[in-house]
Length: 330
Ligand code: COA
Image (cartoon, rainbow, N blue to C red):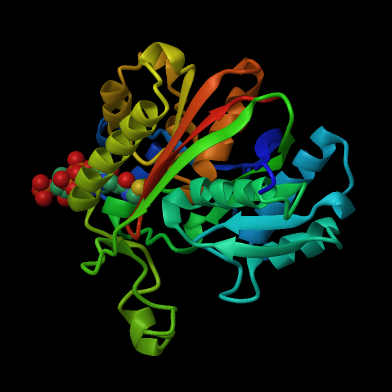
């Protein structure tokens, strides 16, 4: 049997809309306050894509263009585009096909992956497997979410949490021992729907009734999800460390999904990591769902050293959760 190749990240791009929605702005919209939001979540502001004619595909394409520029390659060289999103422009066609058209990746095939806040992590594992198997040489993995399109700005328990943005990476075969070394993925069907968007799918298609009942927005039982997320993210991060014999000293960075600073702190504690080793930008962007992890990689890319051990970890609706261990290869 042919030896499996390893894949590594060779470029990182991002897109963030200009408009900032601050906690003080939200104080004018719902019964909340800056102090409550900062203490309970760590969020100070989020970005909002205001243009009505632009959505997740546009943001994904902008992030992808930055990746191509950084790597100095043309879009025609891309083999695969995987877009993780829960806010696709349309239910179909796939956002990845729209991105292909936006950037001119004529030789690629693409599809979307739906795993909520774990979407980017699952997409990175999928992309990596395509390279390991020899199916592809250049895979664009993108997380893009226009969360403002499904956030109910009259619901104070959810509207404070989410923001819009996109992040993208290029995966290519690695020949220097760096790259994606291991991944663990979990899901657990949540039939109680603690976190979901009730309408717009085939079970509850859009109707006057679904609109009147505000069923096209995110609904969340915050306390239940918080408990599951704290357990899930901490457990899986420890699991990947143990599986790969990594001590806290071996880990250079934790790259956590940014849903709540308290969930991130609990994960870092379980791993025995000090706060200097944890990427946190939730204060600036809130929870951008599939975009949080690549946005962290983008913000920290100049501080990462070749060979650094990174643990990526996420938890999301579904439920879905997982972790990736990689050696930084840039
Ligand atoms: N401003 C002020 N008060 C608020 C509020 C807001 N924006 N939102 C909720 N409250 C109130 C609640 O009504 C409640 O009041 P009560 O005690 O009188 O009923 C009180 O604050 C505490 O609510 P609770 O939901 O227990 O707060 P919490 O500490 O769990 O924080 C979340 C709420 C949403 C921040 C937290 O549950 C969370 O982060 N959940 C997970 C979210 C998540 O990760 N989602 C994505 C999946 S990855």
